[in-house]
Length: 429
Image (cartoon, rainbow, N blue to C red; front, top):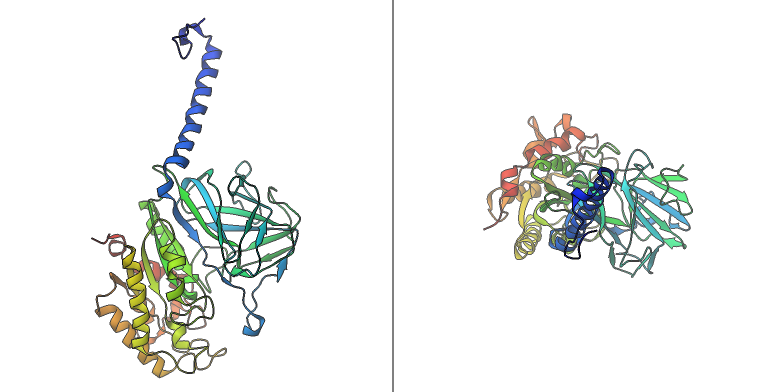
């Protein structure tokens, strides 16, 4: 028998089987303590590894199909998210930013995604909010889940399942998800798979995934901020071919995350498809944990001027960019300006006056200022990367998705490759 002064029995007094059991138990205890250390001591290192900026549900009067039911009741929503960088623990952020009533989530779970609505066996984890398995999110508010242990690899897919028990209008969503989501009746959040009652491509409620982990998770992240070209319109569905996804591939070896803060149709100065960029920059970029740099590509929809009698002048657009620069620098965040991409002939069937020679003149003046002013910390020349050398006011045919505005997958890759990582990763003094 061990004496009271001995915290553990001497190993030479134990049988070989008992020694194996002893070491297994000790290893399990160390693993638990290690995870507890990550969750308790690494709080300052939570980093956004995936985002989808929230926006108000599209109105039927806008003539655009939101692509989701007007409400949910006693249904499970399962969505796949493609994280940029990994970690040892994760948490999710839900949003009721535009809700007109509190949002009740009856249960939430996270797992590694397999294919379709299926999840990897053994990877499923319940999510809690303040220790509770359900959460009521006030109007206009987000809700952040408690940390949950889950080893997540860079460039991997996670499945987030939410159960909505009561009749709930869909007031907050993200329109251009470019990823198939799944609906099912009842609470099937823990199911390994199910036959969906419907599918959809926008994002519902989930606006961010955060990760952490000593020696494993990203210590920092970069944000891509813009409109549909950043959001990934016309990229291949379910293939993660948006330019921020492809930039994330380049950043993965450095354990740096990349988040997508694009909203299709978004404008720099005017509300419409999402809040205007100057208004939402704080929420969608500056307040995201771990973000140290942002690439800004926005303004082409201001020129398209769906909601204005006349497009803004180049001086008005520059004033908007200067506000973004001031906001970023006040938070110590590096900000890169991206030149506006060619758009001659864009959306001719939908909006014949989306492009005009006068709007092209303004685009050229704005791009000249972005390139030469020195007010951004660095420049990403997407215009040069995508334009047709024989017709510089148009997208190169090899990069055109067909609408003369949005790049195809090859065009998005050319954009990601146009980012100078040295300029992006250089810290401000």
